[in-house]
Length: 271
Length: 208
Image 1 (cartoon, rainbow over the protein chains, first blue to last red):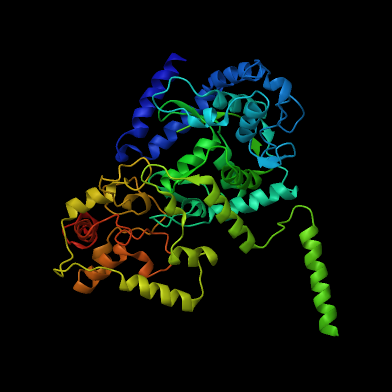
Image 2: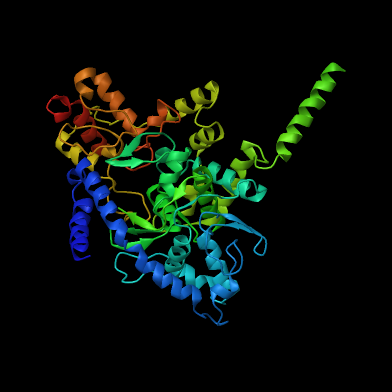
């Protein structure tokens, strides 16, 4: 593990260093590193914390999520929940991705305030710990490791979320006229040396959802798909999508639906 | 009568399709509207990225409504209006300093909610284009610009065209993926001149 940390630090420097350092070699080095790290993934630490949080009686109502939260697979069952969301939840009358659903359970079942969770939902580069919600998402995602994505696209409400997400991905606005599709709508393109998945295809969509939640080496932080969507809009020069909103669920539904049938490897490592 | 039967047949087929489990239940236009309503409801201003950025201007609207391929008459009208809005340098000179142009081309800063609004924006050029031969970390969303001036020459017309294209790509190709750097206020006249020099100056490494 010690050598991993040293390698990680060296790679972090290479990856955030001058543009010239971001060569094809860096890509190859990273892939080597990821393969090496799979045995002792840093994500496991966050899974373990998430499991404790899932089982602990918490919040003003002093109930656990394990005894009160249904992620679509029956009360307290996390197995397969990640690869089968976004899905429609009748009690909330909404299509939700896993993070949005967990937030809903924390608010409705445990009595937490949404504003408190949404105040700082993502780990910053200077934060020692990931927020509880990130740990929870990572734990739940680990319950779908090596399962195939199986979002219920046959459900009319899920289909609406998927199609709306698809239309959102094509929406151009802002000072640079960008949409999601500007970067993610064509095969085989790059920004600098970074390969860009075409999210309209099955091969591209799985690259978009694989590895999340992920331990991101840039900054050494644990982050979720909700964060990834947020950061895409930052780079798109858009205003910010509200945390755990329908907008974010729709985009995750668009990607997950296109990745249906492909294998999810569990929480991973990202650059 | 035959047409009526045909129409009702088509209607039945459409109803069948719409009712079929798994298929989209609305038209593309309806989903576009739903997407817009969702964006307007679920996005909020952050830093310099104000809420009004969500509103598409007439060019963006035309491209959004027609999957980046609007009808010819609309293209003609809107490219004309974009072209008319290009502000050319008053001194009629276009070539700045290619070395400054290279720095601008390298910088991807500007306009995100985490950028300071008062800092100058970069050109983001290498994000999408190959330009100088020494830079191997370049994107491929746009065409390679290596040898741009060598193949095109350095005539006053070419200088003016290159300046105009950077200023407003939509004056030439309405739904181009390239930002309108002058029109958007991202790059000023001096910065665009430096970029024109990077692409056209015979001394620039781009043309070596």
